[in-house]
Length: 455
Image (cartoon, rainbow, N blue to C red):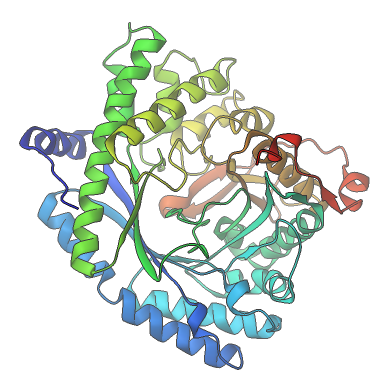
């Protein structure tokens, strides 16, 4: 299908790149690895390695070539694969760890910065493969550099698997302990989802869902700086008019993303999947979702009104993206990670933003409690309860929610964790320390809500 973009749009895009931090955050190639199953983890890992290298050999060179040719920075090139728990069903923990090591080698060989899919879908129960993979997560994330893991523990249709929620609290604690020398860095590569989507190009939650084709190319576009500048240029508009301006801006950003995606798809001879128009911030000044909310009139993000402002922003972004492309997918909205957003960090330091307010804001944004450092002595029960709360928000509201917490070993409230790069740094946040242990220890399954019965 031809894709047309006119000269004025190109000039406007150039301006957004040069002055407003517009970039393509990621080109993510999704690869089906279900046909790589062999007798054991070693042989399966080798087949997975061979297939990834064969399909993704030119991903980085083509991305660099397009970035240079079109003048639009492409920050990351990444890979997602079929959830490894499905491919390795019947393997034990050691076999899963071997597969994870081969994923890491393949990612290094083709030059991508992350590979997602060391994952399991356990929203209604566990297979043997799921349990083996969950057992393998802490060691795999500790011993590999590029491997990312996502575990889906709930859906609106299935309810919440509280056995999985209970277990994930322990896995997060163990992962933090095994990477204690790096401030618990392993946990930054581990996401717990409700209603996970199959075509998300963003890490650490990306995996190539079972409904996806053999191979596909998904684009993640990020434009917080572009939206921030347009909000600042209209300080006197009422909120309805401002929403319309943001919508038009999201339209333009989406068009740029689809252009890059379709060119990359053609050159790599891989089907184009979706554009994920998520306002994904970075630690860079001027590339912050928090700054957008403050430009709308909040003294600090976290003040009363923050949830309403974020809801308006998220909705306007989605409407603009949907008008621009028939292939908007993934998460598409606004992310509110603490460590990756300079404005969020400032709000935490000022005492304006708490974990409770962040939880409220997740009701209306793209994902959930993202890249939040908490005290290292936080119990596994409390982590599980935080996951349960976030999963409940997603389940009831029929949306994706997620938790990416870092219980920073040896750190307390007010201390800092440092990850560098896109992962940034974060102050350790205060959490409610009253115990939910008896609640999460009940386990079982929280039933799906009544509105799930909509067939």
